[in-house]
Length: 186
Ligand SMILES: O=C(O)CCC(=O)C(=O)O
Image: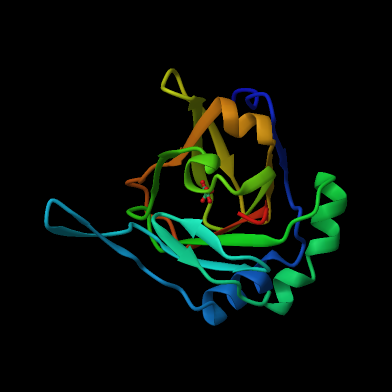
């Protein structure tokens, strides 16, 4: 793997109890698959999502209401805050059931101008490859995200770069990603 882009830090095995956390999130999260309309055609989002946190969160044209933390995520907050040096009051969950589930190029302040600070991205399940490129295009840097790893993305990295999780033809199992954020008052 090439060196990580500036502002990105990967910690392997951040969560030792990753198997149990993945099983709990898959089974107990109220997953939603949104459907968008483009030129009259219904386009299902190629992944499922859920939002937990103290404040509402605007994402992909929808506002997700505040929702109480599941105990397994609440238990991680002190460790995350200590590791990243900032508090978090919300988390967006993305569920990719197969290699055909994906996320297109974006920066996190595209979706959510009310989000402040950096993002802590916890990966559970199948290893998938994140691509990072300069905002507006350019060569991309791959970052493989294994089960239990934490990728820190600084606030500055979101101003300078975009990221995407492309589809893969490999036979991969389910993956859940949790991006922890600090959401201001809007
Ligand atoms: O699933 C991933 O690793 C990417 C998640 C992501 O880009 C996001 O939540 O903004």
